[in-house]
Length: 140
Image 1: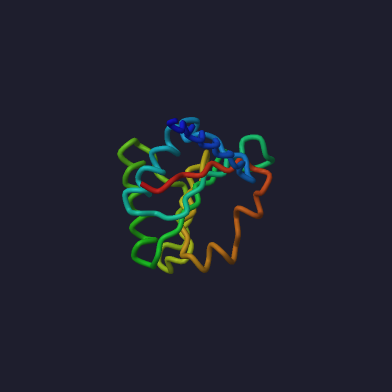
Image 2: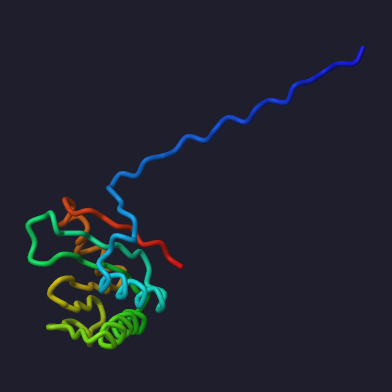
């Protein structure tokens, strides 16, 4: 008598849900998507876009990212500014470039925040704008 054994079927994995609402990157405004790509070219870390259009805000979006050191923070800001300049966009305001702890590029419809790690943690813009839709941008 030959014994027949049945193979056990693998159990399907359970999906985990994220705490914050995350929207696909495809819904980003074109200028913000261009800024995201420029920041990623310079290896920006922990990138998130806060969609403020439904919140009571003075702008539509924040692009927030981190650079590892002063030179990378400045390089990310330079890359974003250069990419948008090619499209004819210039920031109305640039703050913090020399210190390189928090560089702010204001394009009216959106604002780019490039932080040093300690400064980003200290100010916690994501916490301050918790009611905004958080769009996580994966690293390349």
